[in-house]
Image (cartoon, rainbow, N blue to C red; front, side):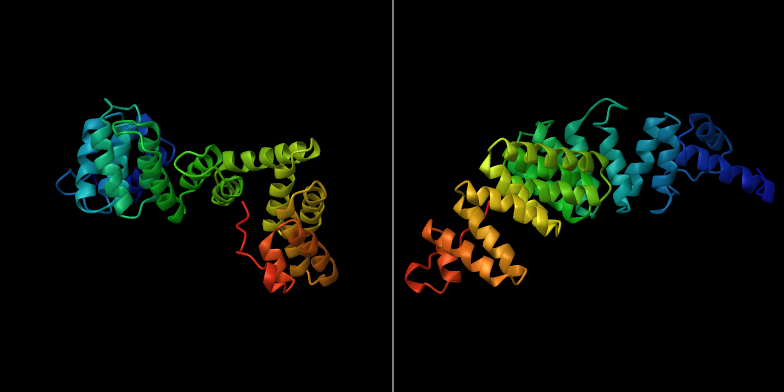
Length: 288
């Protein structure tokens, strides 16, 4: 085909329909033009794109050839697509091969590759089920700003798999996932607040404390004070300490002193430290 202006416009339209909209017919038409580089000629920048054309045209073997070459050229996306095709249902599953290429993608800094290795470990697909390894890869994915990694890490903390169950850590990671654009994480956060508030109203002191701390993280001091006070009044010395610390951060020294005294009398050593009572000053309390 002669690449005049009209033909270039046609090719650009086919590329858009093929890669962006995943139209199989447009991909097949693009292939029939015989203008795509072959597997040996493609560069680090083009192997992945041509591989996608063949993927959407349902020619998976040709797609794999391009992704494999791209991965050899250290293109993280090519490594990921090669691995993902081997466990995503498009071709016969091969979890061991998927792991090899997903790890290459992860090592090259592609967060989704790290997340998917975490999934393999969590589910035990082709690997021995290992929640600690799942946590390791979810953490790396989250550090690379892959929202699904943050979401999955939050779920591990919520369920206590491979880590000590920790409601606040669960919230922190799911909140980060939401900020990174994971819609289900945003929906989960909304449900999480509703459930904690209901549990608190039903007398669950830990829920009152947790939601109070969550409101602190959102800089909503009014709701934070309300729920921490409810927990403190219900006998939670840790909540009294948290309440005092919140007042202190607001420079409300009188209220801070009042609740530090309550917490100190209840055995919260750090509260005694805040009051300058050296004889009762204990180790810093880690708030869960």
